[in-house]
Length: 324
Image (cartoon, one colour):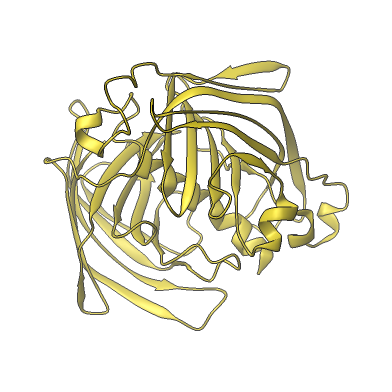
């Protein structure tokens, strides 16, 4: 169960980033909600971290603060590399946090690096939550410090570090992992919004869940690391999402639970045991894909199963028309 949860977590991270970003460019405050004081929130801020003997400096930096979590994203648009930090409540405030505190409260935090070219993400995990001989040498170094949340000017600062890991072959059953250490991470004067509440006018997304209409309050698309992610969210957490290659052409594509190129997901909640994460067999039909204007239209359906609880949801009559 633990290993499955680790494999699926990057999907949650991608979906979280979609809640923060309308494109892989700086946000337009008019599209995403209300800044605490938009007149003074003009600087993009600086997001950086050291790994592999170099310093990663994000070209797009964004953050979201609400009653459920803090989410901070740093994206390098030239390569599609993404670093994601998420802290759940009650840790969504100034302070220093490790897996020890978050796990004790039955929470899940995210510290992850998504490489370019669609490769699997390196993620941090509580050493006590992973099992197997492959983790014998894994050292948890995760630490997030939120040093400032300036509500007046709408900016946030802090530091972070972690050791990320990934399975070398998560689908094929590999029991070997590789690790990457991230140090001297910092985010300085990152603009944040209080919540994402407005859907861009040119996006539409609808579906039925178990025969009942699923009506999102927020719809978004993102192209990163060779993939397009489309998310329809209602409330602060619950969402239906699709992931497929950004080279996709019109046609119908079938996929399974652990397909590495095409995925359908339903995130019900952020339960610490991963019981709110669902996916399964399905298909997506691309009606049109305008790669120049970054607009994609299609339909989808899938059966959303959990590997952790006995619960299934049928996602049918899905449609989307989304800019990314």
